[in-house]
Amino acid sequence: MSAAPVTDAFDVIVEAMEPLTSHVTAFRLRAADGRALPGFTAGAHIRVQVGGDGNDWRAYSLVNLASDACTACEQAPDCYLIAVRREDTGAGGSLWMHTQVRAGDTLRIAPPVNAFALEADAASADAVLIAGGIGITPIASMAAALAARASRYALHYTGRSISQLAFVDALRALAGEHLHLYGDDEASEAQRFDLARLFTTLTPGQPLYVCGPQGLIDAVIALATERGWPRERIRSELFATAAPQAGDAAFEVELRQSGVTLTVAPAQTILDAMLDAGLDPLYDCKRGECGVCQVGVIEGDVDHRDYCLSVAEKCSGNVMHICVSRARAGRLVIDA
Ligand code: FES
Image (cartoon, rainbow, N blue to C red):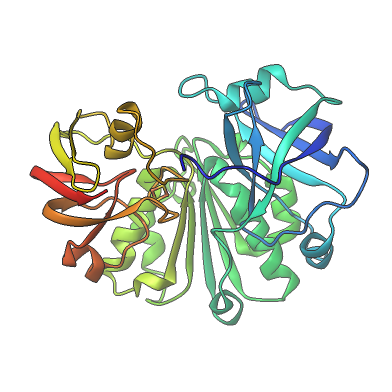
């Protein structure tokens, strides 16, 4: 397989588009055949076919801000709401959504999948929801789901400036005093997001849900781990493909099953090197989250960058995720 094949796609009509900020637009979608849509739970995403060539799909989280509408959304919603942040660089899916799609158009989508669901502990303990930028989309639905269950939670939402945060009015109405807004450019120190300060108010083990850019997720995981959180109490979803890091170097990887040795460039992943070589590895998210690309490690020292493996699994060095992890030094031999 290459990316997970889409076999159950169907058509939706873009019923309405609404700019939420200078960079974020909301899209309301209804089934083209007029029927109810497949249900979903908070944290779920759909995949939307973008670019018009039939092979390019982007994942967008489903937004449900109605605190009393969980049941309808979980069973048979009459519409989906997604929000897309325009990125002028990168692969262009969001740019296509912003510049080529208009109200009344037909889009092809794959049904909801949830890889970032609220676990049972979120409803029984004080859950902490942290969103960076467009990472608010699944987190907002989680807040609505917790509000519907009358659960205690706090929602911390940060971005460049508070005026550029999407869904703020609806979130204020939904979450009230549970909502805390921050902006990097705000003059008041109290309105700038300070993760270390936030953690001084938390108790290790509180369920943590974080969605946004990699820097935010890495910082939350690092601080929580340092302060004694069990890894299973920290759930994350990355809203970008993993970026190369400073100091990344080229290395060789031997694919023992395929009998091929490849050179992985500094800004390349093992997965991309395999795809460029015409191989057909399994993968889906390309962000180190879904676990689909996991392979066995036969030899070598792995720099693990995924969000799936436990610390013990990483220390064992027996498996790795080729969409993000690479050689710490020297050469890798993997079971692929
Ligand atoms: S493709 Fe999802 S973890 Fe690698």
